[in-house]
Length: 243
Image (tube, rainbow, N blue to C red; front, top):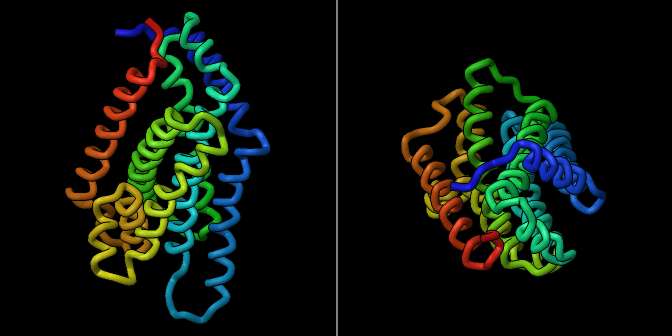
Protein backbone atom coordinates (compact mmCIF):
# COMPACT_ATOMS: atom_id res chain seq x y z
CA UNK A 1 0.00 0.00 0.00
CA UNK A 2 1.52 3.28 -1.15
CA UNK A 3 1.70 6.12 1.36
CA UNK A 4 0.25 9.48 0.33
CA UNK A 5 2.28 12.49 1.45
CA UNK A 6 0.12 15.60 1.64
CA UNK A 7 2.97 17.97 0.79
CA UNK A 8 3.84 16.10 -2.41
CA UNK A 9 0.19 15.71 -3.33
CA UNK A 10 -0.41 19.44 -2.89
CA UNK A 11 2.62 20.28 -5.03
CA UNK A 12 1.42 18.05 -7.88
CA UNK A 13 -2.09 19.52 -7.67
CA UNK A 14 -0.68 23.03 -7.84
CA UNK A 15 1.35 22.25 -10.96
CA UNK A 16 -1.57 20.49 -12.65
CA UNK A 17 -3.93 23.31 -11.72
CA UNK A 18 -1.68 25.90 -13.36
CA UNK A 19 -1.40 23.77 -16.50
CA UNK A 20 -5.18 23.42 -16.74
CA UNK A 21 -5.47 27.20 -16.93
CA UNK A 22 -2.97 27.46 -19.77
CA UNK A 23 -4.26 29.00 -22.99
CA UNK A 24 -4.23 25.63 -24.76
CA UNK A 25 -6.59 23.90 -22.32
CA UNK A 26 -8.74 26.57 -20.65
CA UNK A 27 -10.55 27.08 -23.95
CA UNK A 28 -12.41 23.79 -23.45
CA UNK A 29 -14.30 24.68 -20.23
CA UNK A 30 -14.76 28.22 -21.56
CA UNK A 31 -16.31 26.82 -24.74
CA UNK A 32 -18.67 24.64 -22.68
CA UNK A 33 -19.94 27.71 -20.85
CA UNK A 34 -20.32 29.67 -24.09
CA UNK A 35 -22.05 26.69 -25.72
CA UNK A 36 -24.59 26.50 -22.89
CA UNK A 37 -25.34 30.22 -23.11
CA UNK A 38 -25.62 30.21 -26.91
CA UNK A 39 -28.06 27.29 -26.95
CA UNK A 40 -30.16 29.00 -24.30
CA UNK A 41 -30.17 32.25 -26.27
CA UNK A 42 -30.83 30.69 -29.68
CA UNK A 43 -33.59 28.30 -28.64
CA UNK A 44 -34.97 30.78 -26.12
CA UNK A 45 -35.70 33.22 -28.95
CA UNK A 46 -37.52 30.55 -30.95
CA UNK A 47 -41.19 29.94 -30.35
CA UNK A 48 -41.03 26.16 -30.00
CA UNK A 49 -43.38 25.89 -27.03
CA UNK A 50 -41.00 24.05 -24.69
CA UNK A 51 -38.56 25.00 -21.96
CA UNK A 52 -35.06 25.03 -23.42
CA UNK A 53 -33.18 25.41 -20.12
CA UNK A 54 -32.82 21.68 -19.56
CA UNK A 55 -31.62 21.09 -23.12
CA UNK A 56 -29.05 23.89 -22.86
CA UNK A 57 -27.78 22.55 -19.53
CA UNK A 58 -27.53 19.01 -20.83
CA UNK A 59 -25.57 20.01 -23.93
CA UNK A 60 -23.21 22.27 -21.98
CA UNK A 61 -22.48 19.70 -19.28
CA UNK A 62 -21.96 16.92 -21.85
CA UNK A 63 -19.54 19.15 -23.74
CA UNK A 64 -17.68 19.99 -20.53
CA UNK A 65 -17.41 16.41 -19.30
CA UNK A 66 -16.20 15.07 -22.64
CA UNK A 67 -13.90 17.86 -23.79
CA UNK A 68 -12.50 18.98 -20.42
CA UNK A 69 -12.76 15.66 -18.61
CA UNK A 70 -11.46 13.36 -21.33
CA UNK A 71 -9.48 15.44 -23.81
CA UNK A 72 -7.83 17.90 -21.40
CA UNK A 73 -6.87 15.21 -18.90
CA UNK A 74 -5.44 13.04 -21.68
CA UNK A 75 -3.52 16.03 -23.02
CA UNK A 76 -2.13 16.81 -19.57
CA UNK A 77 -0.71 13.33 -19.10
CA UNK A 78 0.55 13.23 -22.70
CA UNK A 79 2.31 16.54 -22.10
CA UNK A 80 4.12 15.03 -19.11
CA UNK A 81 5.38 12.24 -21.35
CA UNK A 82 6.21 14.59 -24.23
CA UNK A 83 8.34 16.79 -21.98
CA UNK A 84 9.86 13.73 -20.24
CA UNK A 85 8.73 14.94 -16.81
CA UNK A 86 6.52 11.93 -16.04
CA UNK A 87 9.43 9.49 -15.93
CA UNK A 88 11.37 11.90 -13.74
CA UNK A 89 8.48 12.07 -11.28
CA UNK A 90 8.04 8.31 -11.25
CA UNK A 91 11.72 7.74 -10.45
CA UNK A 92 11.72 10.40 -7.73
CA UNK A 93 10.11 10.30 -4.31
CA UNK A 94 6.66 10.88 -5.86
CA UNK A 95 4.82 7.56 -6.11
CA UNK A 96 2.22 6.60 -8.68
CA UNK A 97 -0.74 6.99 -6.33
CA UNK A 98 0.26 10.53 -5.40
CA UNK A 99 0.73 11.43 -9.06
CA UNK A 100 -2.62 9.90 -10.09
CA UNK A 101 -4.65 11.59 -7.34
CA UNK A 102 -2.78 14.87 -7.76
CA UNK A 103 -3.55 14.82 -11.48
CA UNK A 104 -7.20 13.84 -11.02
CA UNK A 105 -8.38 16.27 -8.33
CA UNK A 106 -7.69 19.63 -10.09
CA UNK A 107 -9.41 18.43 -13.26
CA UNK A 108 -12.36 17.08 -11.29
CA UNK A 109 -12.69 20.35 -9.35
CA UNK A 110 -12.67 22.36 -12.59
CA UNK A 111 -15.33 20.10 -14.08
CA UNK A 112 -17.61 20.51 -11.06
CA UNK A 113 -17.23 24.30 -11.07
CA UNK A 114 -18.02 24.55 -14.78
CA UNK A 115 -21.01 22.19 -14.40
CA UNK A 116 -22.42 24.45 -11.69
CA UNK A 117 -21.86 27.56 -13.80
CA UNK A 118 -23.68 25.85 -16.68
CA UNK A 119 -26.76 25.56 -14.45
CA UNK A 120 -26.90 29.32 -13.96
CA UNK A 121 -26.18 30.06 -17.63
CA UNK A 122 -28.93 27.68 -18.75
CA UNK A 123 -31.52 29.44 -16.61
CA UNK A 124 -32.54 26.31 -14.70
CA UNK A 125 -33.39 26.62 -11.01
CA UNK A 126 -32.98 23.82 -8.46
CA UNK A 127 -34.13 23.41 -4.90
CA UNK A 128 -31.74 21.91 -2.33
CA UNK A 129 -32.58 18.27 -3.09
CA UNK A 130 -32.31 18.84 -6.85
CA UNK A 131 -28.91 20.50 -6.39
CA UNK A 132 -27.71 17.49 -4.39
CA UNK A 133 -28.96 15.08 -7.07
CA UNK A 134 -27.38 17.10 -9.89
CA UNK A 135 -24.05 17.40 -8.09
CA UNK A 136 -23.99 13.69 -7.23
CA UNK A 137 -24.69 12.47 -10.77
CA UNK A 138 -22.56 15.08 -12.55
CA UNK A 139 -19.62 14.55 -10.17
CA UNK A 140 -19.74 10.78 -10.70
CA UNK A 141 -19.81 11.26 -14.48
CA UNK A 142 -17.01 13.84 -14.25
CA UNK A 143 -14.81 11.44 -12.29
CA UNK A 144 -15.35 8.69 -14.85
CA UNK A 145 -14.46 11.06 -17.69
CA UNK A 146 -11.25 12.14 -15.93
CA UNK A 147 -10.14 8.54 -15.45
CA UNK A 148 -10.92 7.74 -19.09
CA UNK A 149 -8.84 10.77 -20.02
CA UNK A 150 -5.94 9.43 -17.97
CA UNK A 151 -6.26 6.07 -19.72
CA UNK A 152 -5.93 7.72 -23.12
CA UNK A 153 -3.09 9.84 -21.77
CA UNK A 154 -1.12 6.68 -21.04
CA UNK A 155 -1.21 5.73 -24.73
CA UNK A 156 -0.67 9.20 -26.19
CA UNK A 157 3.01 10.12 -26.70
CA UNK A 158 2.14 13.81 -27.22
CA UNK A 159 -0.76 16.26 -27.06
CA UNK A 160 -1.53 16.04 -30.78
CA UNK A 161 -1.91 12.28 -30.57
CA UNK A 162 -4.08 12.68 -27.47
CA UNK A 163 -6.53 14.75 -29.51
CA UNK A 164 -6.52 12.20 -32.33
CA UNK A 165 -7.13 9.06 -30.27
CA UNK A 166 -9.78 10.62 -28.03
CA UNK A 167 -11.88 12.00 -30.89
CA UNK A 168 -13.83 8.78 -31.73
CA UNK A 169 -14.72 8.21 -28.07
CA UNK A 170 -15.72 11.86 -27.62
CA UNK A 171 -18.03 11.65 -30.61
CA UNK A 172 -19.72 8.51 -29.28
CA UNK A 173 -20.08 9.76 -25.70
CA UNK A 174 -21.49 13.12 -26.82
CA UNK A 175 -23.55 12.33 -29.90
CA UNK A 176 -25.41 9.27 -28.63
CA UNK A 177 -26.92 11.08 -25.60
CA UNK A 178 -27.58 14.19 -27.73
CA UNK A 179 -29.49 12.12 -30.31
CA UNK A 180 -31.17 9.79 -27.81
CA UNK A 181 -34.51 11.59 -28.14
CA UNK A 182 -34.71 10.95 -31.87
CA UNK A 183 -34.54 7.17 -31.96
CA UNK A 184 -35.59 4.41 -29.57
CA UNK A 185 -32.51 2.27 -30.31
CA UNK A 186 -30.13 5.17 -29.72
CA UNK A 187 -31.98 5.93 -26.49
CA UNK A 188 -31.44 2.36 -25.26
CA UNK A 189 -27.74 2.52 -26.11
CA UNK A 190 -27.47 5.89 -24.37
CA UNK A 191 -28.83 4.31 -21.20
CA UNK A 192 -25.70 2.17 -20.92
CA UNK A 193 -23.31 5.14 -21.12
CA UNK A 194 -22.38 7.32 -18.16
CA UNK A 195 -22.94 10.38 -20.35
CA UNK A 196 -26.35 9.04 -21.32
CA UNK A 197 -27.22 8.49 -17.67
CA UNK A 198 -26.21 12.08 -16.91
CA UNK A 199 -28.22 13.39 -19.86
CA UNK A 200 -31.29 11.46 -18.68
CA UNK A 201 -30.84 12.76 -15.12
CA UNK A 202 -30.79 16.39 -16.31
CA UNK A 203 -33.87 15.77 -18.47
CA UNK A 204 -35.66 14.28 -15.45
CA UNK A 205 -34.68 17.30 -13.34
CA UNK A 206 -36.16 19.57 -16.00
CA UNK A 207 -39.37 17.52 -16.06
CA UNK A 208 -39.60 17.21 -12.28
CA UNK A 209 -39.36 13.42 -12.45
CA UNK A 210 -37.25 11.00 -10.43
CA UNK A 211 -33.67 11.97 -11.21
CA UNK A 212 -32.02 8.55 -11.56
CA UNK A 213 -33.20 4.96 -11.35
CA UNK A 214 -31.44 1.80 -10.20
CA UNK A 215 -30.13 1.08 -13.69
CA UNK A 216 -28.58 4.55 -13.90
CA UNK A 217 -26.86 4.12 -10.53
CA UNK A 218 -25.48 0.73 -11.59
CA UNK A 219 -24.18 2.19 -14.86
CA UNK A 220 -22.28 4.93 -13.02
CA UNK A 221 -20.88 2.59 -10.36
CA UNK A 222 -19.84 -0.16 -12.77
CA UNK A 223 -18.27 2.19 -15.31
CA UNK A 224 -16.42 4.01 -12.54
CA UNK A 225 -15.03 0.73 -11.17
CA UNK A 226 -14.11 -0.56 -14.63
CA UNK A 227 -12.36 2.65 -15.61
CA UNK A 228 -10.37 2.72 -12.35
CA UNK A 229 -9.39 -0.94 -12.73
CA UNK A 230 -8.34 -0.48 -16.36
CA UNK A 231 -6.31 2.60 -15.52
CA UNK A 232 -4.46 0.83 -12.70
CA UNK A 233 -3.65 -2.14 -14.92
CA UNK A 234 -2.40 0.00 -17.80
CA UNK A 235 -0.54 2.35 -15.47
CA UNK A 236 1.52 -0.48 -14.02
CA UNK A 237 1.86 -2.35 -17.33
CA UNK A 238 3.34 0.69 -19.06
CA UNK A 239 5.99 1.13 -16.40
CA UNK A 240 4.87 4.43 -14.87
CA UNK A 241 4.88 3.10 -11.32
CA UNK A 242 8.12 3.51 -9.45
CA UNK A 243 9.52 0.53 -7.65
